Image (cartoon, rainbow, N blue to C red; front, side, top):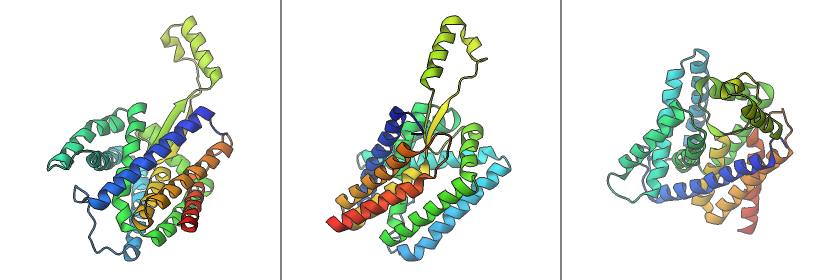
Length: 294
């Protein structure tokens, strides 16, 4: 295993909780209009609109790397901030009563969490908000896809993920840039230390003042799961929900958890892996099982 068992279980737990929150949020907006001007046209054709989604993803990736290359961190942080506020607003709005000013109130509630997340990093706020960010994002994309365009999207994303991690290594560079320079990371982020290092810290605290601890090198391990690895399974479950119903959607979620579990339990330390191919394989397995059963 690449990480400690307890860390793997925490990651899987957060992933699973986010999937079911996402399913609720997507279902809510299947019957209610998306606020903030995000409601898609009623006559949108997923097949004809699909190229626009791919182009939008490409533009977003290229823009991110251009801003990072020229070290325009403020624009990147502002970009993250706007997306976080809107996504949190969408999710929070789905849990509140249907009243006239609730969408605005939802944004007001989201605002301080987004400020802390982007400008004053806090692990609890970071991971807590991640549980609601991806359901909000998924609710925007689910109406724009059908099962066939979803399958193509998952294959393309998985191929890109393999290339970005194993071939070009840009995914590792992007993660390091977000964590070390932007102080923001889009995804679950769990820092932890080994048992040996915890004992070392305890010993140093007993022997020296806190200022002396800074002079000693303590290795901090980081377990991460990228935002794309979380949001695409929610989108997949949402498309299955609107097309085939609740149980096929649940099968897709369980398949995604199975694929991610395989990766986390059998991955090796000091090696990097693209998560989407494993998650996509699990999603496809869930689809096949649901089609066979239902």
